[in-house]
Image (tube, rainbow, N blue to C red; front, side, top):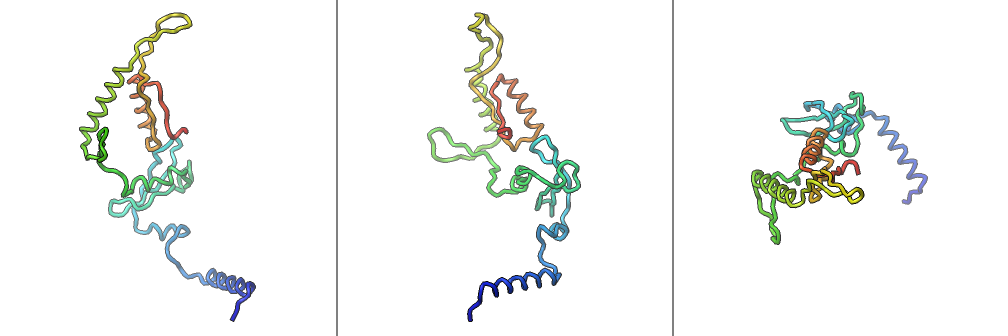
Length: 190
């Protein structure tokens, strides 16, 4: 027995109308937010990424984050989030996120686990060596043949990431300028 295209469309329309009119409850989904977050503790917070200050609702169960979404009652974003704010759950809960320092020595093909004290000391030592080698206290201006105080290093550049919040960016830029680094850029601006 064959079915024409017209019969198929009529049957599909009748089935869709029957489901829509039946009014039977279905599983929780985005259209049923109350059912989706039932039994979860909700906390309000602010998105850490930019200076807009969008409101977030963080839902937890037994101290673990299970959902992050925009706060519909927040006056700034009214529940809407940008791509960075929408991905906050993936930042907070991610099995692939490294939790320890992994170091690969020059010329080596394997990573070795190191502790935080070793990493911070190594970074500080390498930054100090680079700054000492490339630091300029003064520079000669060829136009007027005068020596000017510049107190900068051209051997380092600082590149911030979008994972930094406003306060971290402020401290990061202050530290860079105190080190004499004039080449500052931030990924979120690009």
